[in-house]
Length: 121
Image (cartoon, rainbow, N blue to C red; front, side, top):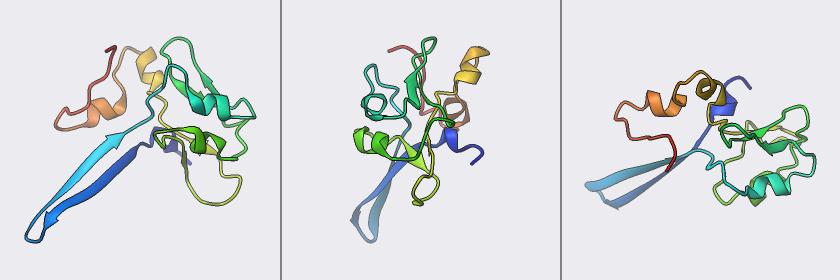
């Protein structure tokens, strides 16, 4: 699925009672954990942590769609385009291709309110 590698989770919830309701949204891509549980759970070696930027990436050739990574991830970062068995996983790539060119990730640059930030903590 083209572009699926850039998916992120967006959690939405409502508070209040009509007519004073409020919709909340929290966007969360992959956290690219220091010690990722998804990588440990992947039995095919499809998930790995790349060295230059610390991004957790998926090798689509090795992924068999078993969903062990999804079960292991505390953030729900692994995504699947369908519920069909064997559907390969995709997730945020931290836009390592953009980082390699000295640019910011697409989500950071596309947020009109500049609510996203990227870089070392």
